Length: 200
Ligand code: GTP
Ligand code: MG
Image (cartoon, rainbow, N blue to C red; front, side, top):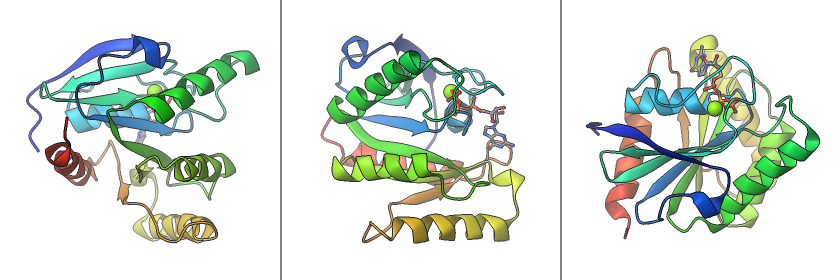
């Protein structure tokens, strides 16, 4: 898919403030620092669209980006090890949870997983939550430029094995690197297919 335009629309503390749900929408979620904001920039080709940081906990609100005037990419706050107070973290979690469960135009949630780490309980628990609530999602293994192809496959296999204890089949899976742009065509192709099939 060719990206003609991408622009920041708004930053919302909760689902109430989000833009009108009249366009197909794709959310990006995962542990803090996994590369959600960077991936949004890589996909759109606009390197400073979403704010990134080497320190976890950068994105703290629900951020809408309008692409090609027809669909939204949404940058969500990370879960996991952000250095913030428990109360603050509770608030973000609540905002993200509400968004995930209630956002009617959310077509697919991309769950980003750091390809360098072995299966993380927080990621496994989060995907369980999506499964129980029947939220459509796909996995993206990020930062693949930092490991070899062999290690990447090993990482994915470990996740599959951990998930197959409670899942019958694996979700759609992509790999990504913002350095090599690996995965860009595949992820955009998938979004294009879903946008085309959407009733919105
Ligand atoms: P929060 O907003 O804090 O939850 O983080 P985030 O998931 O949005 O992560 P962000 O995009 O800010 O990236 C975190 C760090 O990882 C930054 O230093 C990025 O440059 C780096 N990074 C992200 N993706 C990649 C990648 O594919 N390869 C490499 N080498 N670094 C990456
Ligand atoms: Mg971010």
